[in-house]
Image 1: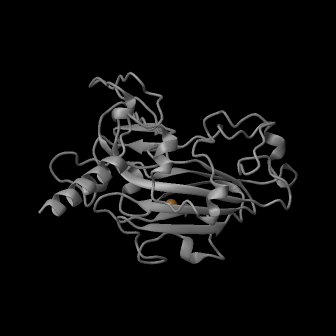
Image 2: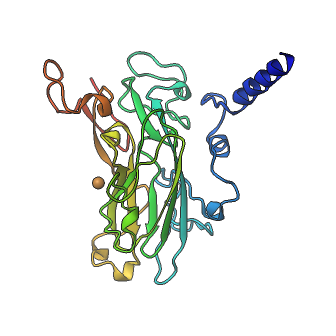
Length: 280
Ligand SMILES: [Cu+2]
């Protein structure tokens, strides 16, 4: 009996140790506490999630492994991201104290998702909305380890716009090109960024993309080979605009097959630009 109590106590302590409070810990801790193997070959190539936040715009910014860069001919890199998918909410604890009007004390804190200021449950990658910004050069290899931590939900990610000619099994269409990634599982996407362009990635399971599992995917090319190079002077990592329509309910659950008596319309409540917006 005593042994059982000790064992229970150990389980409880273990759980308290790993259960993670958005308010208490910073974003770095979040990554460290995630279950990805730290010995992964690709850990060395881990990219920041927030290359679109403006701090990476300086042309002189050089970091050996940073894939967001001015592209040169024949200098491919390996670019690695860890995606942790979770059920989450807007106006969460990381946002501090919030009013019902969507005014919060720490709206810019890491892991705070404001959306349009209306509290609702959402689905997120790495507690960000929009999710991590993938910005690479043509010829780079993109590697994404996805850990599905969404209770009771399977998922896949589709890399919208890429043809995946060499890797059709990386296209992210559940039951067609891969089995859905079940809750608790880790799946590795690995493919070549073989065509320059402005793309995006999104969950391909149900309507999860409308609940927050979406992000931009930019594949740049050397200026010398860009037919549009004379039309712009700068192509900065923060000059990316992701526009999404936004509902005030969990669209995964409410929009399919559609309601008959109220909320019958499919018009969004509002729109978000890079995950943020406002509503009256
Ligand atoms: Cu798509």
